Length: 229
Image (tube, rainbow, N blue to C red):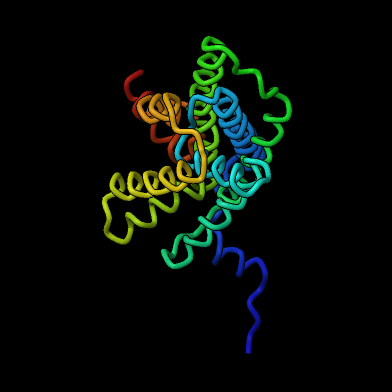
């Protein structure tokens, strides 16, 4: 009976890593995930409300104790486990997302004092900075091309089973928002602003920061060369 080599086992479990510019992709991924966690922490410090998954993490923290970023890691692990029956394969970036975002949330919350959002002007400044940074960070870490985040992958997996992607994503986010709110998470103007703004913003940041493969670069260079002649 032949044994499966560790490298072959990993290749079965994880999505293949893009061979082009791997060190740069790893650096971009880490920078994007750290910035993503920092953006969530800024929104949390505004106390005006956060995105649905962070409402859940905040509610779990307030109900059971522990840091919000730690709960983000734990919920990420649970969500990743939900990929198994959906037959979704994570990438290296997916695994990094689970850990680095939560650590960055905790680190940023430790650096930004709890009273930083006192007063309407300060609260809104933190909120808007967090939303803009979140959109930029999403474009950066998605642009690395090393796998989707665990929460996005859940919606993609449900869509692969027949649900429209928008219905799957909206349904999941409404569910976690409701649970988080019931546990004491903050739902407010920030939640609404994020919901309205993030779609149009990432529509621009994701293509802007995407690291294209050599084939894609060659494909765009060919029409340009033809036009030059």
